[in-house]
Every structure is written in C-alpha cells, then in structure tokens.
Image (cartoon, rainbow, N blue to C red; front, side, top):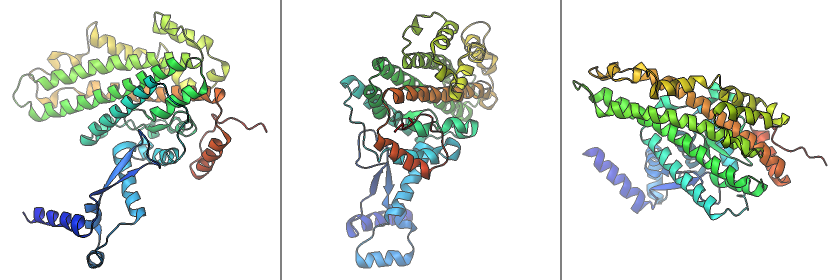
Length: 405
C-alpha cells in the first residue's frame, strides 16, 4: 500500500506541481519522419535517481528537468535494449550509424504509391515484431553476428547511403523507405522487381524469426504446464512452427537468388526448374567483379547444392521419407515436458537462420554495389559519410566511388 501511495504522490508531484511530462519521446534523428525509430524516456525513474538535495531544490524552485545528456543516455539504453542489441549483435555500432543516418536529409525521390504502401506496411509489421521480442525476450534467439562474422557486419557501414541496415539482432531490419527510394532513384531497369523481391525477402526473414520466437514460447509453456498430460496442444503447435520455418528458410534463399539475378539484369532465373540449375545460371552470368567479392564467396558457399544439403535433408526428413526422430510422436507423447527433445531441432535450424541472415546481408551489399554504379552518391553524401567514418572504427569502403577529379 505504501509503495502505491508513494508512486501516486510522485506522479502528482511531477505532473501537477513541477509540470513535468510523463515521458519524453526521443527520435534517432531530426526532423522526425515516417519509419524513424524512437524511444520513450519516462520521467519518474529519472526523478527517483535524483539525490535528496536535488529533489528539495527542485521542489522549492517548482522546476525540474534532467539534462539533455542524461535523457539521451537513457534513450540510447532503450534503443539498445529494444532494437539494436548489445556488442555481440553489433548494436553499439549500428546505433551510432543509424543516429548519423537519420540526421541526413531523406531521399528526394517520390515513391510510387505501391512502394509507399509496401514500405509503410513493413515498418508497421517490424514494430509489431520488435514489440513481440521486447515483451518476451529469449536470449537464445539472438544471432550474434558480430561474434560469428564481424567482417560481414561492417558491410552495414558503406551500405548505409543506399540500403540502411538498422539492426541484425534477430533478423535484418532495414529502413525500407530509404532503400526503395534508392532503388527507384538509381534508374535500375529492374527496379520494379528489385523492390518486390527486397520486400518479400525481408518479410520472410521476419516471419522466420517470429517462428523461432513462437517455438520457444510454446516450448516454455509445455515444460511448465505439461505435468501428467500425455500430449499438449503446445507441443503440437511448437513442432508445426518448425515445419513452417523450414519452408520459409528455403523460400528465403530462392528469393535471394532471384534478387541477385535481377540486380545484374538476369530475369529468367525463375524459369529454371531446380535450385542447382538456378545457381548455375546465376554464376554463369554474374560479372567477374561480383564473382571476386569476398561477400559473394560466402553466398556461393551457402547456396551451393552441396552445402544446401543440410537444409534440404532437414526439410526432406521432416516432410517426407522416414522423418526426424525428435519431431515424431514417440519422442514427446507420454514424456515429461522437460524430456521432450526440442533442442535437437531448434539449434541446427537456428544456425541455418544465422547463415541465411549473413547471406541476405551479403546479397544486399551486392545490390548496393549495383545501385552505386548506376547512381553514385553525391559529393555531399560522400563528405558526410567520410566525416562519420573518420570517427568510427575502420571499415571497408569498396562501395564508395572513386573521385576521378
């Protein structure tokens, strides 16, 4: 009761005596624009952190306002916690990069209505996904790409002028409005298809991450509540989520292959009937400049028929043939929730999702290459980027055009 009264008194003091708002909304840049991430910084916790002398002084003056630096520090903590993640997620670097990005003027290119609808819809869907992960956080879902492949993460820096990467904590989070505008502004002959495939692939990536999240939620529920039950709905639903994730992982790769092809003007890949033929047709027509890139080599390794066998075997074993033991009824019917072999399917598939995400980053890097060739950044963009880059960690600059003057 005392705690409740104290909280009520603090709220009355701040709102009606000191005229302090309940929170401050801090955006990553100014002026605020559609799709820009923002953080709510609440006044009550900041007031509670003040020492007694400062509180008495504020009450006597009928004025209290935390410093801008203090509010910004809390906002940065909120951004890290809810969007960017920690150092292992490359969150600290991407927070700095996106703060710079949203301080730059937005692209002047007007998007077609269909592009606007796609960008807005993905932004709304992304916020819903962020809320899902924020409200029920599972540390095991983090991709930790800064540990797996730190050099791949640095691709986000030179990509920022064309395809800004907000976060890679659970999936690739993109500034879709900016990316679609950059594609349209470049005048790429396949702009329509590029926007469509980027939209679809990014959407699939989020659905994969949501599938893993829902799987772990159902697993936790089963382990806590199965008790003496022979079989629970949660177990059945969890395993069905993995069926869906397997299909989405394969679909994601197919979309990325098509996206790579369109970026280079290759429009007939979907006519190839098998994955092997699609990959062969793609490699045959890619220019040497692309084939020599380190990030292409990672893509090639993962989409090659040999290395894709791991995913295909999982998929075939689950949906056809003799099946995977961990997903068959005898592995969980009549067993205690804690003994159901859920990890046997989660760990290898989540590893596939991490690799899939790295391939998506590399695919977007190659698309950025093509956009830069068609529409080199202006001198103002280059100067702004190099000013930021000079204050950041060393990063590759292979996307930036060479000034021949």
